[in-house]
Amino acid sequence: MASTDAFAAQPSAAPHEATVRPTVPTRRGVLAPDRLADLHPLARPPETSPLLTAAEVRATADSIAAMQDPDGAIPWFPGGHTDAWDHLECAMALELGGRDDAAQRAWDWLLRNQRDDGSWATSYIGGGVRENFADSNQCAYVATAVWHHWRRTGDAAFVAGMWPVVRAALDFVIDMQAPSGVIWWARDAEGKDYPLAMLTGCSSTLHSLRCGLGLAALVGDARPDWELAAGRLAHALRAHPEYFAPTSRWSMDWYYPVIGGALRGAEGLERLRGRWAEFVIEGLGIRCVSDEPWVTGAETCELAIALHLVGETAAARTLVRDMQHLRHHDGAYWTGWQFVGGAHWPDERSTWTAAAVILAVDTLSGGVTEAVFRGDGLPEPLPTLAPDGEELDDVEALDRLGCDCDPAPVIGAWSNDELAGRLAS
Image (cartoon, rainbow, N blue to C red; front, side, top):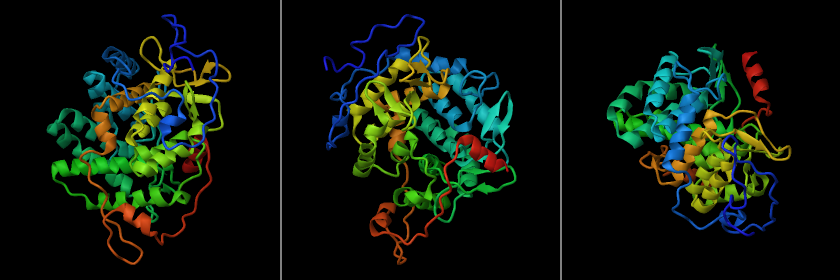
């Protein structure tokens, strides 16, 4: 390899073109080493050079703001739908990119659309509801976004104003917790829970519950029910993979238990080592799904955050650099690249991909996002009871001792359309 720079040998893109790679890099076979950095041929020692300049981050934030609807909703792309999770991710990125004006419009939209039960519809389009059921993970994410805003600004008035929103949302979410500790994926308009647990969604929800507990401490409103719910969910995530739908072809299921905090340290590192060769494509990023020749920018950046959280910052920086071939000249990002056909797919530049880039860059630059996902200042879940009734100090202690949890049925994995159809039926 002549250079460790992922782009050193690439021609410059014309001003109107995204930088793309004309060939597919060859994967190198490497025996399992002790460090993830060794698995990535382009990994470099830690460096201080910025992954993006401040001007580039601002341009990416501007690209998100340019796609914001007049009512404040942030759709996936112009004319597309909006969901609360991606909307909030974009709001965080807008704030980091200096677009507080657009972020405030996003917050205002969120407040206007929260329902009486604390939830949001799964998706909106054109100013109305597109899918009326509620996704537990999407509803929980408001706690993460409010905690992120607090960590960035220290604005106690904002936290106080948003507290009723967060409280209602997380109360709605924990009401969907099953006896096994998992939180069901969705609830329909009639209040019927859909008995399917998603590993990625539950991992994100665990982190949101902890952010909610941090906010509860700030406002002086103790929520031991959230602590218990978080403890039960953490145990399910750590010890009971059989409780979750078999969606392991998705890269998110691989790394999200690390981002969400269920697995960290040696356990988190071991998890990321385990499927590295399945998902990582040298020089391009990571596959969205294991069985398709398709790398996606958001998943690549989320994996970079997970890597950083287990100490693999060099590999994380390399991945963020690798996915810059998806950057458009205006600072937006293509969602993905089909590296066999040689085309961007889908044919869209998505707001949430741009947001994921900003959050990853902030994390790897030591910004507030690093502290948020590392869990700085967040309470741990309440102690859990061992099978013999002994109170344990933490969730990990129960995992070490083993448990007598009942086996939970796992419902087959379906496509999003099939899941939505079953929920509506």
